[in-house]
Amino acid sequence: MSKKTPRRPSSLIGFLLRWHPRLGGVVGLAIIAWGLSGLAHPVISRIQPSAAAYVYKLEPFSSVGVLTVSDAAARAGLTESLSAVRLLAWQGRPYYRLQTAAEVIWLDARSGAVVEYAERDYAEFLARHYVGDQDSAVKSMSLQTEFDEDYVFVNRLLPVWRVEFERDDGMRVYVDTASDRLGTIVNNTKAATSVFFRNVHSWIFIKNDSLRLSLMTICLVGGGIIALAGILQYFLQWRAGRGWRQGRPTLKFHRLLGVSVALTAVTFTGSGLYHLWQKQFVLQPEMVAAKYFDAAQINVGWSTLNPEIVQADMVAIGDEAYFRTWYDGGLQYSNALNGKILADGERLHALALAAQYLPTNAPVKAVRAVDSFNDEYGFVNKRLPVVAVDYERSDHLSVYVEPRSGALATVVRDADRYEGFSFAFLHKWNFIDGLGHTVRDIIAACFAAGIAGTFILGMTLFLRRARRR
Image 1: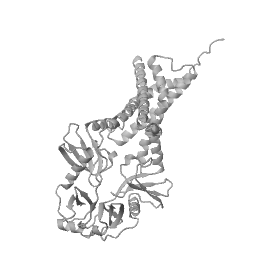
Image 2: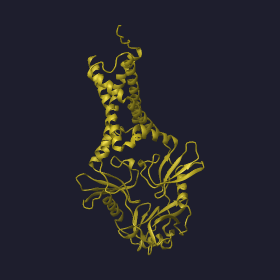
Image 3: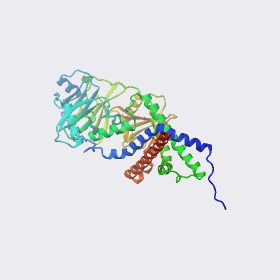
Image 4: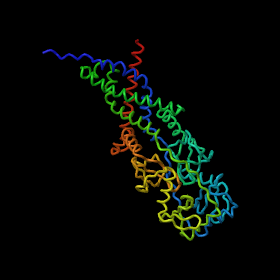
């Protein structure tokens, strides 16, 4: 009985053999860059500096003897209208932190005296608390109102104080004095790795957004097509009796590695493309201007409300000012002019904020307090606690607002949920979180390395053939 002879290559195999390497030669560098930066990501995340603390807890203080805002402002000679008022205790004394159109002013809440440099001193105090450094000298301090390469958009909070310490690692700490929160900490290592990742993975070196979107789209689509074509080519050649064991060592290894990671290459490029384009269609919220109130009219008497206070923030609901006040044991909304308690204040405030940022005629389905990050409202959104306002719409719109600051935290529709699910499961591999984050990152990094290695071998073969012609 004669041996079965291999089938003759089909015209489709010939087509794939011609165009598979050519397309790879066009987009190969981009896929290699994404693969290597994906490999580096878990390493980068583990060499980032860690904060000594992630929360600063305010201590309750007695409201006895605390002046009203109007009395404190009058004693300080302050006549400007106020967009923000905060009452808090620091180093054992209560203070008002007042925001006018031009500046932030701190007043002693029991005497009305202006506290010079309190804003800068408080920023330094918070920075030292979060980084755990009470000894290093402060090299520089500045108020930052925009995101930049050192303090990127993912940190969300603005404005923040940038506090740089005189240290060998170049430590700088970004803190929000309006809410006591940590924006982020950055040292020289984090700055360098962030620049590397954002240039190699996100291509920020291309300043034109449209050009960057177009080039990344071409390379992501091309990478997915190459991976699919590679699977098809391998299958057809296998059927024709020409498996991965045939050919030179480089070609054999390219085929074996490629068929092992091809499906992952499709999911990485597909979810990356989905993520890239979904960001182009996010809902644009309305710009909400700050509301100003006459300090002379803010007459709430603290001791008549509660003997102990943790903190109070003035917020606007409609055209009225209220104090959102944390007592030792609860939250309460009281009218800033007369102290009258607003029943269900948190819910009414959240509804007012949501309506301001994203006006809609749809009825409200639910109002939910969100105290921890979850699959829909992830850590990337930074702010907690928040309130989600769900609407009866076909896209199941949810508007997340932070009553404390009056900020819009995020907006989520079904399209955003689908993309978030795709990115979490197909790009970040959250579906194997049960194995532990370290195991998940090792597995994902191995596949990212395999994809980069496949394209490196493919481009090597492509260049060899090109030189022989």
